[in-house]
Amino acid sequence: MNILSAGWRMAYLKKSDSRAKSGGCIFCKRPGLRSDRRNFVVLRGETAFVMMNRYPYTTGHLMVAPYRHVGSIEGLTDSEACEVIRLVGTCEALLRKALRPDGFNVGVNIGKCAGAGFPGHVHVHVVPRWNGDTNFMPVVSESKVLPETLRDTYAKLVKTLGKPGPTRRKKAGR
Image 1 (cartoon, helix red, strand yellow):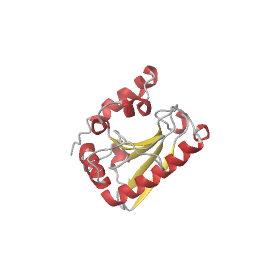
Image 2: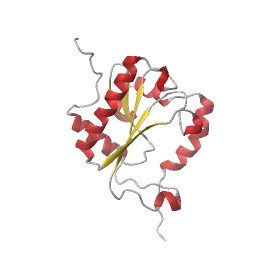
Image 3: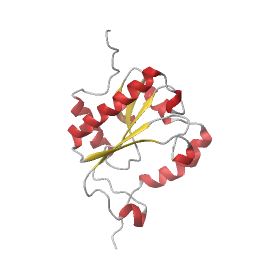
Image 4: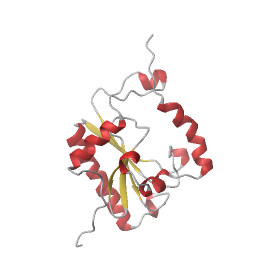
């Protein structure tokens, strides 16, 4: 029998209940922290940003969220909604160039019953997919196997952007 180690999984399971109790929102906290690299913030816009998922479904799983704490798409301002969608497209292009996936899943979970880990802050998942990336591991052992570390994937994405690191984007006309 082979034994796979997914050490991050237990930390995730333990945090899932505690983060709801603590009121911590990663989408509010991470953009305000000093190190984008340490917090896996890939790209910043004026009203929204892109960050990697620390507990990804697949390598390169990104999330796009507004800076403002808002719980649903209907609560977004027009400029937030436009930038979120524009950044989803930017993520698709970035992932195509950096990781060469065969396709994507793009989705929004609104509300805890819909699977939202942070139901008070709407965000869009951009999940790259490859032919044959589905296997028995999630079904049999409730585990995923990622072929690359988050830091290595982050480095590829930032390099593909052609920047030394994420920076805040300027509004058009400035």
